Structure formats: structure tokens, C-alpha cells
Image (cartoon, rainbow, N blue to C red; front, side, top):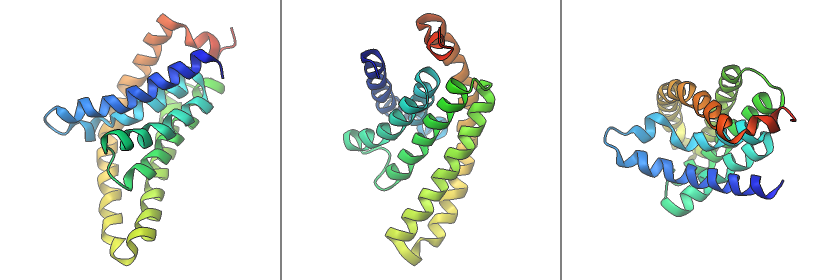
Length: 178
């Protein structure tokens, strides 16, 4: 990994920490609806590939939790796993395999949500035991319903941002090996 990619990765992690703070100050709970902590993983995967996408996705929620307390305790663990999958899978499909950006987003969103649900299930059973059953079901439905709204916004925003930034910084030349 070269120095520029390390700097951009740090910037994307900082972006992933700051964006949720900004959205949580806006009335209407936009932070929960727009899922701002996910964007840095998608951008890292789309601009620099699966390794950097996975690293940014993994460390953004952990650092955010340490600095801001968001996402909340315990949930930052499965959110870190979820965003790791987003960055890794999106980076692999879009950056490495040159799949359509929307197909890459859809596949990574599905696999990331499965990771989220699995993490919720594991943490709830390990930490909370039998009293976790209602929490698991409610959390899965809640995450799914909120996640659908966030996915719609991500489908609109992520491709647009990636295409516009590639026009300026030419990250896509690296993607195509130019």
C-alpha cells in the first residue's frame, strides 16, 4: 500500500467518524435512516479495492465508538463486521471484477446485512442469553426496515459520488490498471 492510499484511507475513516456526528445533529433521526457510517467503506472499496475497503470498513465503527460512543456499545462490533463486508465485497466486485456499480452495491448490501443479522444473533446469545430472543427479532426487523430506506439513499448517492470523484482524482485509472 502506498503513502497516498494510506492518507486517503485515513481521510475516509475520519469521514466515516464525522459524517454520523453531523447527521445525528439534524432533527428527524437522519443518522439512523441514511446510515452514514457505511459510506466510507463503500467509497474505500470503490476507489481503492477490497483490502482498503475492508480495512476502512472495519476500523471506522471501532474508532467512531472510541471517540464518540457511536455506534452504541456492543452494536459497534457487528456494525464493524458489517461495514468490513461492505468495503471488502464492494471493492472486490466493483474495483477488481469490474461489475456494474449497482449490482456490486446490491450484492454487498445483502451480504453486509446478513453479517449484521448474524452478529446481532451471536452477540445477543453470548452476552444476553435467553432474555435476548425478543431483542433479536425486534432488532432484525428494525435493522431491515431502516436498512431499506438507507439502501435507497445509498443507491442514489454512492454511484454519483464515486463517478464524480473519479472525474477529479482519476482513481478509476488505478482500477483499470492504467
